[in-house]
Image (cartoon, rainbow, N blue to C red; front, side, top):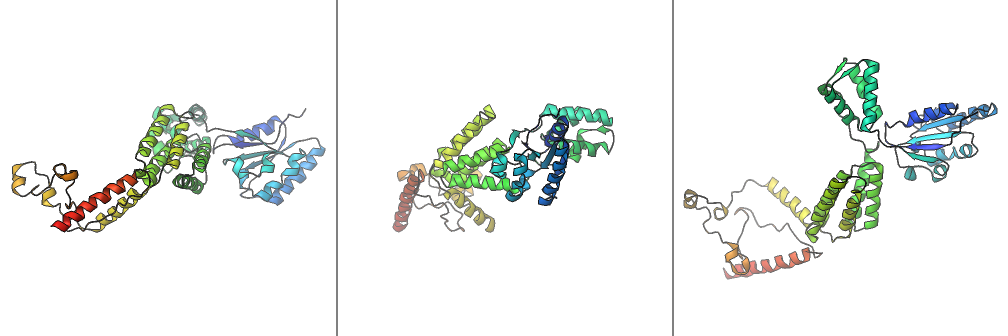
Length: 386
């Protein structure tokens, strides 16, 4: 009696056991195993598998065709599987690290049962380490064991590669040896880092463009893809200062509060706070005036020399410094009309005035712009009197 097995898709991060699960399913069903790779094979390889599967069907034997990283086949190549999956000639088991809703042909996806796999838990990784230690007669210090789990980051294949590398150098494994062997390891997100940064760019630009629905879409895409929620929170805090700034001074406070809420609750409950921050920032008035002013002043300071602080602006905590002229001539703004020392300069004497900060007329900055305009009018009048 042949075991029952259906066409399916295993979706999960690298090293979570997709290939192993596929082999176990094929063995359980007593099916013949076939495997192709989009990196090496094309339509001709699919046709060859189909031909062999037809011969086996005559002998009442099932064929399991395993396709690793199936999303790398283009849409036309994915279509080649459709009739053979439909009539049961091939039991297709695909594996992918990418979101199948966006990467697979919808016609093929509708014929596959999708199973979402998670990264291996620390306990699973610990079991792999224990088995390797027994099989290879390794001595693994507890600190080294913890570091191996940390560097594996849920990836069983990465862990096995590390253990294989360490086993070749000797039987006793210390934390220092693990640190040396794991140098250059990258955190998990996806295997196409360009796409990661493209998605971050799309999220940032959607918020900047005051598009709350698109902003939420990209936030959910990245959360769904396995992005670190705290990384996304840090990006939202950055957006609050870079793209909103003083147009809404509460934006930064709200973003920080939402990130702290995530720290308190964790996933998945805390992700709602990130969603709140995303929508708030997308709907807030926008200004990059401070961002541009900061960049302009950084360039100015980096290009100019170290102009001395004017004596009137220097600190004078002791009598000696007062005798040297520190603080003499300083006008205390609180003692001036309107609380403003009209006509006073605060740049170094050798540096010309720079109006780098130019507030917009959006949100709170509209009030800032009006106040600065009044103060500059006082400066102009003070200058005309002198």
